Image (spheres, rainbow, N blue to C red):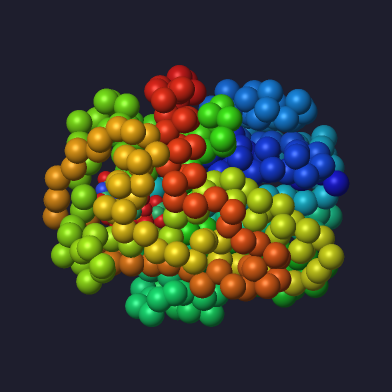
Amino acid sequence: MKVLVTGGAGYIGSHTCVALLEAGYDVACIDNLDNSSYEAIRRVEELTGKKIPFYEKNILDREALKAVFEAEKPDAVIHFAALKAVGESVAKPLEYYHTNVYGTITLLEVMREEGVKKLVYSSSATVYSSVKEMPVNEESFAYVTTNPYGWTKIMCEQIIRDTAKADPELSAALLRYFNPVGAHPSGRIGEDPAGIPNNLMPYIAQVASGKLQRLSVYGNDYPTRDGTGVRDYIHVCDLADGHVLALGRIAGGKGVYTYNLGSGKGTSVLEMVKAFEEASGRKIPYVIAPRRPGDIAEVFADASLAEKELGFKTKRDVFDMCRDLWNWQSHNPNGYEK
Ligand code: UFG
């Protein structure tokens, strides 16, 4: 079975390519390398000993996308290719709606033309950002979010549901990721953010390596156990395994399945700092800073549906996430050096 991975050179995409190849799938990849590096694909090939046909193309380029489908004849698609920074989406809403929503529509149209009926979609826990009750389950979803990035995920989920309603042969899995962190244990692939990282763990890793001076902890007056924000961190390799399981689920099913992919546990910012210090042996200097606009106190998953229906259960804990992130960061201080 061949899987076309859009955005396969990115952080989650590259780890998923490894998991797919190790599970015996053939993989082809399309990525415009806007926020990723071909070096990630080269290293996935090196890790797995397998080849990945790679197309440096934009999914918005319908003719190019169609040509990839015709050359590769995939049986299924995993769709990662998208813009993903919450803050940037507030400043550039049209770019986000264009790339994420129009990109997904173009992909669905080409899938229809080419008769491809299986899709795994990269959604996000951001769809729960208005929800107050924790943990959030798949039904907690409220069609409200706080930023254009979140809206693109809500809209694309709905577009996929409607498309599947109109075409009963289409089966799709909508995977709502919580906070993916860590790296492949080999230290060969990992997250390579451009510029100063927005997210907590890549920021901490760059403080540990001396690239950044100190972490700003955004708020210690939240109603949480130590006052700092609580999130559900998931090792990127567990997340990658979730895609393989979801693909198995839709291979034998029809319709749309929605799953939270998280650990089900909340961890605070200060607990992550401590875990990283233990795993790396480095001190992480930090200051308490004002809350970051748009942040919520806590979000963590009820991950029981994915466990029940997919057999999905995270295997790696917070220590593993920090150890593997530090292994990647210390061996690749400048990422893929693009
Ligand atoms: N934080 C800091 N300092 C930093 C960066 C983050 O204290 O320099 C804190 C945040 O305030 C928050 C926690 O660390 O409490 C996690 O923040 P991240 O930016 O790492 O992650 P978010 O939970 O804000 O957002 C992430 C993704 C979104 C996705 C969301 C889903 O970036 O794309 O998870 O829950 F939508």
